[in-house]
Every structure is written in structure tokens, then in C-alpha cells.
Length: 170
Image (cartoon, rainbow, N blue to C red; front, side, top):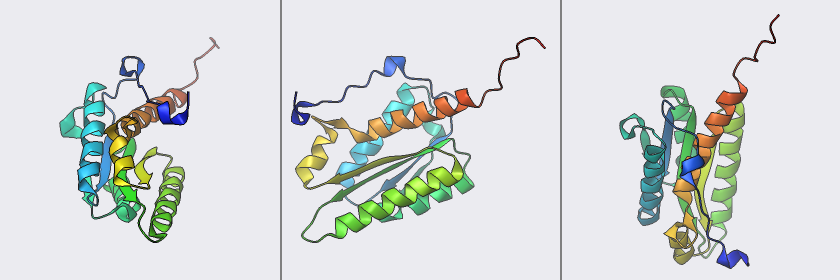
């Protein structure tokens, strides 16, 4: 099977519950036709996993470059177990996309490490609108749903690891 034939499948039946988690979403308004599909899939996935839609804070920002500030703001001003960042950067005639993608990925990674909170990278970094559409509900699934599932899995894993050790009786 070639990578072109790959279609991600996520079985939510075996996924951890999101009930009681505080997961928020930062989403870029740039390429809104794509990012709105990513957002809808992320919200739907979180709801399927038990998170009340009313408990999700959504922060819209002008572009992908603003996602790190949005994530930091959500961490600072909202109780958050994880932040989902959604955006779409489509390559143009210049290398502008490379600077945006690298800056955002690095900043979100550093913020996640510094805060010890999962910050998922649901940013499409594609060469064309067609590629973006294929990753926002097309043949390659929806990266918004994947980012939401990743956030829930990471929060669950961290909570499991941070449970007090069981006593051996003395």
C-alpha cells in the first residue's frame, strides 16, 4: 500500500472518555473554508468522547501565525487540560509558508513543554487547496478530528501517569 492509498481510521469506541476534561480550541480564520471543517470535526469528536460542547472555549484568530499567542492565552485565562490548535497554510509563490509553519510548530512545541499541557498541532501545511480539502474531510480524513483525539488521549495518559502509586500494604 502506498502512502497515497492511506486513509486514516480512528476507532473512537476504544478512545478514552473526555468527560470532565477542559479542552479548548484555537482556530485560524485564514482559509476559513478549510479551518471551519477542521473545527467542526474537532468539536464533534470531543462531543462523541463525552465533552459537553458548552464547555469548549473557541478562540478565533486572524491567521495561523497567531495560534501560539491564542494557545498561551487559553492556558493562562481558562482552566485547560489541553489546547487544540487548528489552521491551514497553503504554499504560495514564495517561501512565506515555511516561515509560518516552522515558527508556529516551534512555538507551540515550546509552549507545550513549558506548560506541561498537550497542545495539538492541527495545522495543515499543504501545497494546494486540493490537498487541504483532502485533509479536512476528504480521502485523508479530517486532521481536526485527529487533533481532538490526540488531545484526549494525551490528557488521559498524563492523568493516568500522575495517579498516586498504589500502596503495597505498608
